Image (tube, rainbow, N blue to C red; front, side, top):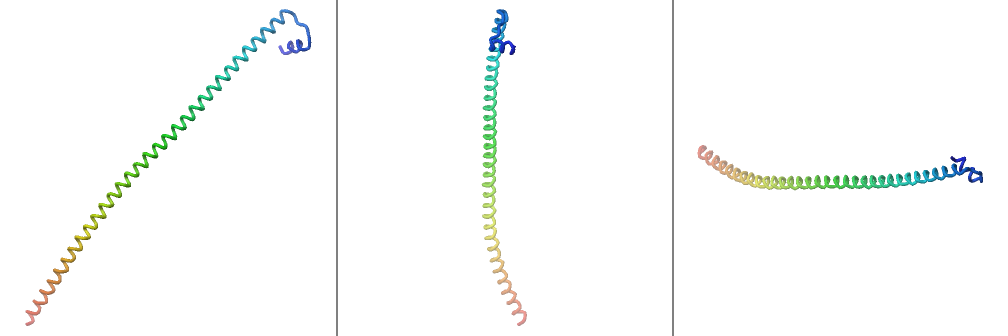
Length: 128
């Protein structure tokens, strides 16, 4: 085929049947070229769509990660608040218990003083 085209370019003579055959073949090649160009455009459109889908999927993955981390963060905040509340209750209970222990300690000290005084009197009575 290329040799025929080169012959035509060089001014060679070809017969009428060969000329028609070349015209048909050129038309066929042009149609094939247009088909291939259309296929390339279709594949490029497919590539663009797949790239867009990939970007959306990545964005969705990022949103899911952010949401999951946000949920986890909120859960940790709630656990921290609950732990702080329990700590506050424990501290309050400890303060209350400390007050009771101090009160009992004071009462015990007074009873010991009373017992010492009683012991002293009994000793005094027994020795006299």
